[in-house]
Length: 487
Ligand SMILES: Cc1ncc(COP(=O)(O)O)c(C=O)c1O
Image (cartoon, rainbow, N blue to C red; front, top):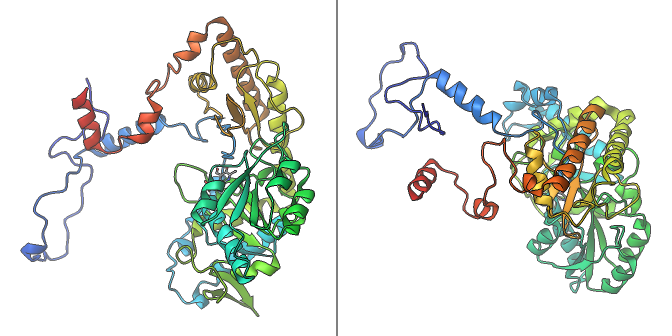
């Protein structure tokens, strides 16, 4: 019998999922005009219905807890549950943002120490833990660049250089901050083309945004030359720290000459990434830019931790109160658990795993950039280009094997991009299984491309009209029932 897909369809009038003891509080008569005119439309279901419904819905979802998730650029790694418990501890979760600092010293100590640890890891002087995400950090970094040039009365600097391999948020943030973004081309090996860079740099350059390693997993080996070119032209260097994982404890953006950076705490340091969940993109700067940081920044005076809300040169406050406090606490717990001894291991394992997958599959998938990669790399579809199968088909077929596909069609440098990031904490068995499945899929493609073209077969829904799903998503019960009527 059909029970319905949604909890609303399972509703039966009068069914209850709770029983409360008789209230001992005297009834209070509300003024009639304060009362609502009709009951809210809530599903009427038993506790059992609720538990079954949500358990079954959760099975339809693929998460890092259910399977391998090699989504390049996203660093979908396992996050220790204990850090979640720590962030949810009552002493943290009940803090009120207006509490006097004398009563929140524990939290401020965590902020202060996290600021310091991030400085040590990245080689930048001071951090603000305020921004809510990587892209938010980018915007703040660009606002700092703008203010810096304005204070120097250097108003002609209106351009931000962004490589063609950059994450889409980079040019978008530059535009939102009021800059014009100028593209610089990459070499065949994915790194910035120095000759092209020299051509686009001039006295209108406000700065450059770079990810290092970049989005194809290659380390910008010419970074010192790049920093020289930009600094000599009067610009600043912004480091997109989304790819910090593979250089943790090995190399520091500050030492490479970067002036500003953000770190995606929700990728590198123990908070699940994606799905619009809570994020945190702390921004770090060199000493000369410290005064521009968004407030608040936590500082220490004697034994007391203080929170500074005002600095007249600051770009201002860009999120409320402490930003996403839970994400900062998880990052702090993760950093202390690993310590400086184990951070380099994270980097090494992420690089080893990526190279292992790359080398194990390059005889069947087209590898456009040879050589040692960092934490991720790209394939450009199948090696045998005569087979009529696209990257999208490979991605869909992977779903039948309970694996999340890699990032597809990004970056835009290749036609059939598949960006694979296995991350550091997957076991060799899991990675070998992924390699085996990828080889099986390549064999299927050769034998009968239709197997891939009609995939997936085992998922709750088959191939969706992805453009329609993105542009006209059905996110409410009403839209859902209306869409059934249209059918
Ligand atoms: C290279 C790169 N830069 C920037 C971002 C933006 O970060 P966020 O999603 O936290 O805004 C991402 C996100 O995955 C990324 O991969």
